[in-house]
Amino acid sequence: MSILTAQNLSKSVPAKEGEALCILHELSLDLRAGDSLAIVGTSGSGKSTLLGLLAGLDLPSSGQVMLAGQDLTRLDEDQRARLRAEHIGFVFQSFQLLDNLTALENVALALELKGNRHARDEAQQLLKRVGLGERLFHQPRQLSGGEQQRVALARAFAARPKVLFADEPTGNLDSQTGSHISDLLFELNQERGTTLVLVTHDERLAQRCKRRIRLEAGRLQTEAA
Image 1 (cartoon, rainbow, N blue to C red):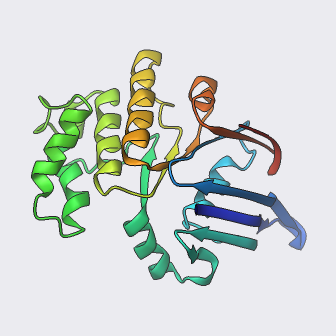
Image 2: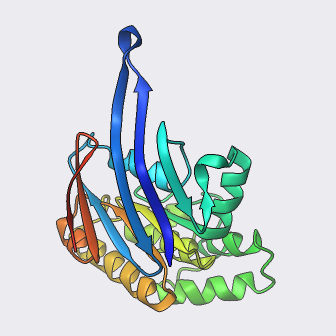
């Protein structure tokens, strides 16, 4: 059964002299639980726009996005936020950790917001899973870029999302650390059945996904199995 579906998705924004600039052109896709999809393309091709629409962070100019059986285009901002909290995880290139919290607190917070009474224990297990069992009480400024990304990854998976969106998850990392982060993404994807949707310039990461789409000027050019 589909977990995420886009039908004839388009996005336009106002341009000079009343014209509209079309960023995304009538794109359709369908993902099932446990799928992994890489969205690739040059800068300005519409990758991040597509990611934002699929995650309900923005609304399309036309078309439809169905997430976990809900039509995002028919929900208001608060309803979309609740749906994201229930079903979606995010990993960003910039990590977006809370600076005044420890690694353990950053991960536990995602569980506490869902009312999990064992949040700290589960957060600790996840951090051990990503190799940070000795760094639980370090704040982000005390961690390397790779360690911060592993905290972000543990936080994203803490709430057991149905879909994980990752925007250039290895973009700020050296090749060895980026390879380790990639391994963790796909290990957790397989263990938990989480659907992965990745925006990436890293062809090695893209090739590990079950499916790959390429955007050029907002248009779907190819899709690889």
